Every structure is written in structure tokens, then in C-alpha cells.
Length: 211
Image (tube, rainbow, N blue to C red; front, side, top):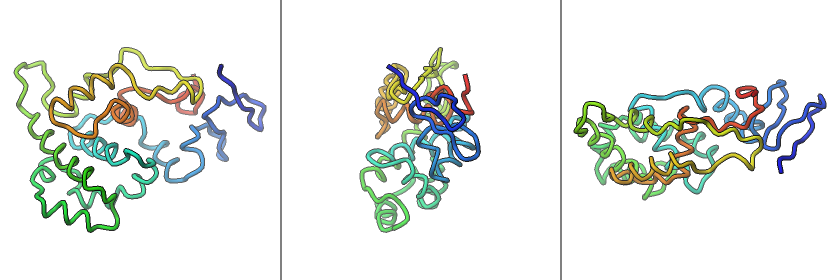
């Protein structure tokens, strides 16, 4: 059963949301930390279609596995520098020497498997181009992920109702794995889909999703 908290204004606030000091209701995860709040206000859930933009966010979601998103955001600039501004072509050309270089960088998340996966995913991204056998098939990573947009968004009324997977994220994860992408499980793919506007998983009642 969905419960709710009461804001100072006596307006019911669903569990998982916070009335912030500026008078706006945000998810708990974006309510206190300024870096997370700025990300929610200015980037999370806004549509990203281009190949490089989707590749960057796919890599970042992969780096988040087992960590907090706040940790990834704090290291995002360092990761951009280490991974050539997330250019799929440039990262696809990385060698073992680049893996060792990144592992020596204190500003990034120094996990060998995740670093190697980012390089592997860049190569898979480049391979996708021109590989379709139909004029209607997706021609790059950005187009592919958007083909998995659900016909209807979920409408969670509390944190407990926010999904961790959807049939579409399961299907996207399977296709990407078939295309040799790594760190692309169904939960990670739903996080990606939510972050780039493919699906709206915001709790109903935030200032961005008031109803």
C-alpha cells in the first residue's frame, strides 16, 4: 500500500519524494546533494538520440554497477578526459597501453573490467554502423536504443512502485549482448532508458511530473 508523508504546507508528498528548500518537489535521490539536484534538473530524462551521447551514457551506466550514481557524476569529467570525450571511434582504437594508462588515473573509477568493457562497447558501437540488412533497421546505437521505447510509461506513485526492469529493457539488454556489448543488463538498461528520455520512471508528484 502506498503511504505518504506530509510537507510543511500540509500537502501530501508521496514516499520517495522531498519538498526541497526552493519549493520544488524532487525525488529523494535528487533532493539534497547539489550535484545530483543539478543533474536531475538539467539532464536526467531529457531526450538523447545521437550516437556519441548515447554511447557516453551507456559507458557511465556501466561504470555505475555496484556504485552510486553520485560517484559516477563526480568523476564524469575525468572519465571524459580518459575516454577521449567518449568518441566511439577514438575509444575503439584504444590499446592495452590505454587500459593501463586509465588504471593509473586517480580521477577515474579504476576497474579493469569496466574499462575494458567501455572499449569493447566502443568497438561494438562502430561495428553497428552500416551493418543493417534493411533500410528500416537502426543504423547506429542511438537509433537502436530508441526502438525499445515502451508504448506507455509506468506511473509510479511511490518509490516502491518505481520499476527496476521493464520488458523493453530486458529485450534491449539481450540485443546489445548479442551485439557484443558488455555491462548492459536489464536493470542497467532501464537506468539508461530513463536517463535519456526513452521511458519516464519519475515518481508522479515531482515538479517535472506533477500528474
